[in-house]
View 1 (cartoon, one colour):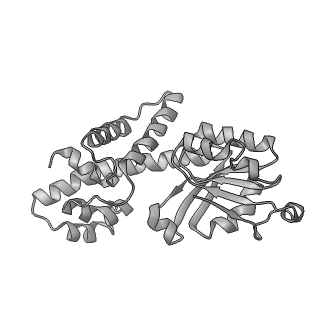
View 2: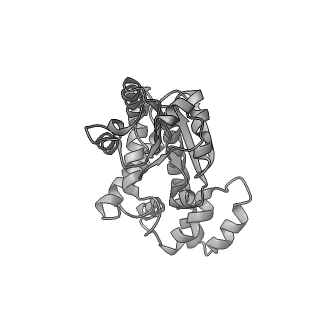
View 3: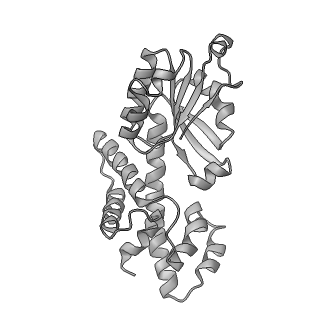
Length: 249
């Protein structure tokens, strides 16, 4: 997905008069981004000086820093801006957008981000948006791991999972994953949502970043390993909530 916007988002009058753009893209992984951005027919080749490239893809922080440098050489601004909220969030204009880059440029494009984001926040310099998304994915992995065990116990104990969710969602255990996935997990429905193929890509990025800081992330490593086993079973396109199947029930 790549979209252009030339409206009133703070682009300088001179740049606007020259056809400056805001180009937003969201593809698959680091290499997909490079294939779209670079080359004679790539995104950068067609952008005007003073334009802004916004990357919503979940990538490594190193790629964000690489793109920022490549854009700077061409007089183009760059913002790394991974999102959370899935397809429903995009359709409903309710995405959470985590940004890295220059504060002035972020301020210029913020009105545009509001068209499809419930919240857009500048987390710091280039790459920090991506690092915030890593934290987001680790949190999701942990929640799904606990939710898988909780739903399994609820089912085996004869509890009504929908009723359990209705009670617990108002307390400390409440989460988006619980409200939107617990019942479908109990029903064995996984043919929708965010595929574990993509989650494994994201968790790989998290684990690589952790290594650079000398950190061990045992829960993340465990969930990633369980997802790898599910991929081997041919479940790579299923929603991440299919993690419950790794418990053997």
